[in-house]
Length: 214
Image: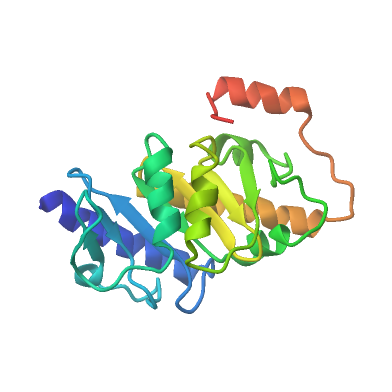
């Protein structure tokens, strides 16, 4: 119970930080964390990440039954798909961050690796980001698409919607989605400027040195 109390506080603290820095707005974005008993804590539907109540977080048991709290985000299909298929996932963050959404709309991005190799940290903290097609928010097909990746990606970018990052804990997931957004911002700032990127050899060295899952 002590761990659950701490995780409730952590979700609200990181959510406030995300909101205060403009990485999401209004009632957009959602977060989930897996508990030691296999259950989940999930942010409620229609809630601002800047004003979460720890007691109002949706609490699920290991079988996916809602035990307490408000109704969860309608994006549960994408959350459950990651937990089912991505080994080591204990936290997930989904945002509608501006530059990532903008990048998802460009016609010439590579769908199997949407982030250009601009910095070392986008490679080591995020890895390859798969672009998924547009789905209506909350649609079960989002979960189906994520399951189709068979756990090969810790991060995806939903076209015209936003990024989703799964990681070993909430801090790592937040750091990774922030890095994804900052790299998308750099890509948008440099669009059409022919920037000097990391070479394939430099990228491969980072993957090897930091044991990045690609």
